[in-house]
Length: 198
Image (cartoon, rainbow, N blue to C red):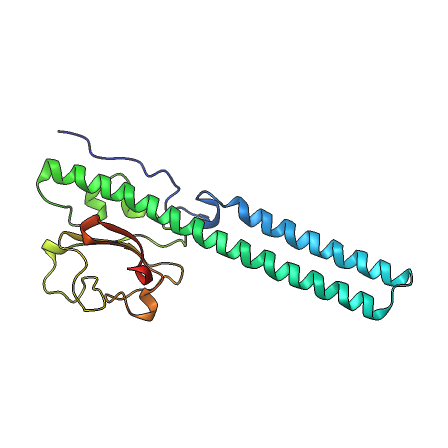
């Protein structure tokens, strides 16, 4: 029989696992540290300048400018990190989708869970250190657990696949506050992105 197992390209749940170092862009954490070192040295230079005769007003103005620059730099860094994490989650989910389709071709059904899918996808963690969530709709009684849009209509008819996002929490309606940062698969694979953008 065809071997459907594939190996996820990232680390999975292991002892000492750090999500910040498991996906492209983890070097940004080091960049943030370099920003802080730069700012500390800048402040030290300003203090030395004060001892050389700078007025208190000049010193305070320089510190204020440094603080503004730091705020801008950290804001840009945070935005870049969020974008990197989103893209990594989407990449992981594309891998899972591909494995799902290969499984379906051979078995004419989707797996009951990610463990049955094989390939270690049941232990694959999202960028925030949580496992990806999967629900086989054909095996689910009722619609209570199905992901739903703002009209409470299920967003898939085959299976749900999603990351619970940075907060690690979720509930079935995408409009719920704790679901807004989820990365979801919708329209039977036609959409892959933030729940808040769906």
